[in-house]
Amino acid sequence: MILAAGLGRRMGALTTELPKPLLRVGGRAIIDWGLNRLAEAGVKRAVINLHHEADLLRQHLAAKAPAGLSIEYSDETEALLETGGGVAKALPLLGAAPFLVINGDVLWFDGVGSTLQAMAARFHPGGMDALLLMQPTVNATGYGGIGDYIMLDDGQLRRRPEREVAPFVHTGIQILKPGLFKDCPDGPFSLNFIYDRAAEHNRLFGLRHDGGWMELNRPEGLAAAERALGE
Image (spheres, rainbow, N blue to C red):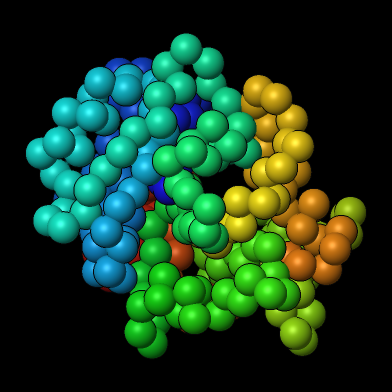
């Protein structure tokens, strides 16, 4: 699933008439980068949620979807459900097996081999409920925060203690088990609720990304990504 329903308010005037996933970086729409990565990894079907300027996204994807990748939509035009609520609404389309979820405002480059295939190989449903792709905070392009998680030797994740800097930032790329959403809140809620639920049972894990990653949720992030792509 690609999360593409957000309003993109941190982009200011850039998203007045465009949904954030259609903003361009490196000569193509942000969402096209993610769709191409999915197709390269062998994914055959993607679910995309829609809210802001939904018709523009539908039109773009009808023309630009990679060959061999079918797209279904989870429509949130009547009510925006945030990240967790959006995934929960789409569960009937996603099925009963663990699934990938990707934020619609990130761009990543593989290191050694396919990042998505490496995540699939690392994910073990017997011991994990969620696997998050983690980027070292010090080399996260366009990111201005102080990290999200500490990763233990076995890969388990612990949230950054208050007023401390954490070595890893969550990339917005993850594998989740649908059972995590059982008895979840009605309406809008954040995926952080899901991560915390997994962590309570020591079933939240991370995989260190060995390639590049860019956060594209602010104008300065877009500018930083353009500079990095140019280099």
